Picture (tube, rainbow, N blue to C red):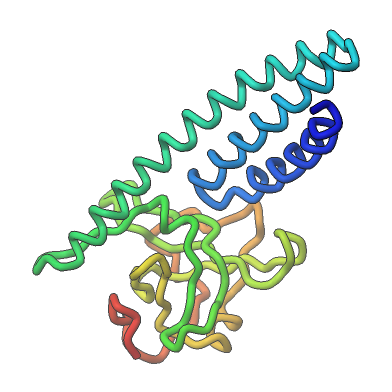
Amino acid sequence: MADLASWLAPIATMVAAVMTAANLGPRLTGAGFAVFAVGACAWCIVALQADQAGLLLTNVFLLVVDVIGVWRWLGRARYAEAARRAAKASASRSDASLFSFQDLLSASVVDRGGTALGPVIDAMGSVEDGSIAYLVVSDGGVAGVGEVLRRFPADRLAYAEGKVIASIPRAAFEALPAIEADRWPLDARHARSGIPEIEGDPRPSAKGER
């Protein structure tokens, strides 16, 4: 038992660290805390076998934190699922359909042919009417290193099935002006400043049709 725990403890801790650091949504983050809890239990067994009181107390505390993390993040996952169900149900209505802002901020932007342009980093909205002024989309780079941030006007985007559908191809996306990581456009009314006119329909089909 002690030998198994000595192997399980570091493996579970490393796997859980990757799952939570990935930040790929509340469900995966909650599962990461669950794996952390397994690792904490294994470390407690190792501590008992080695008679290390400090290691035992540390991991008992971490186990409590992990349980709270599971409760909080899997609870958020339940709310996220409710939002997705509401968005899916609204798509069949004759009036305007809905989308989840949480899903929007974890979505990928693709063109109408399905070619990936980049993940959404954030969305900026107008205080005046609550509308989305523009999205900030990451272009290139690895894990945030070497990426270029581009602002994309909201009226050239549609949201469908967990993806943001853009009305322009990859080449036109790369021609959009880059923004500095710590200096984003401040005025929603001038969010298009410096953005050249884009050919094609102002807003693509909500279902991403060509």
